Length: 157
Image 1 (cartoon, rainbow, N blue to C red):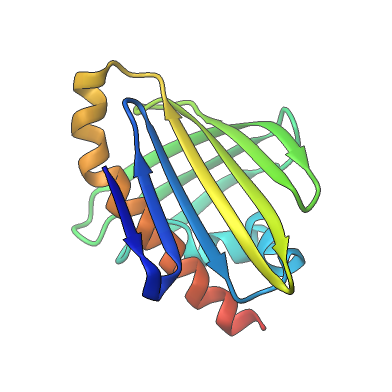
Image 2: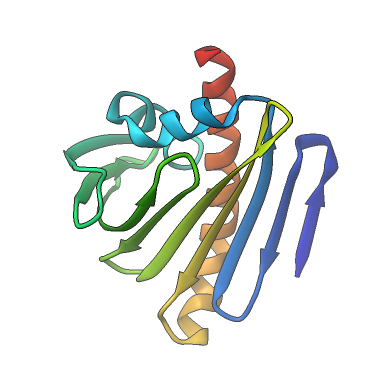
């Protein structure tokens, strides 16, 4: 299944156990990368529409931990723990989501003439029956998160 949203510069691909969101942002790569690397930025846009986050630990370096609680608009809290696997300045962030659903996320930042192409790939460990359920909320959630990032970047510039 593939969706193309030309107007919003977003492409979504869903595989057997993988979701890939590709987005072009009208912001320089340094700014987009900075929005991921600093708690004061990331805490403002991370998560689907209506969600907020309370960061408990934020150590964005290889071997570091990023722990936070996502607060849903319905009042339900979702604890999250991510282990930072790899970080290449201005190019790539890789982290392992260490609570259900388990996945490895890779964010790749590419320079495009003053804009940024961001490819966000989530490779899930759970079996296909679990992934089939997870993708029903993970796909729209990831797309909404990228929309929120775009809005946040517009205010950062």
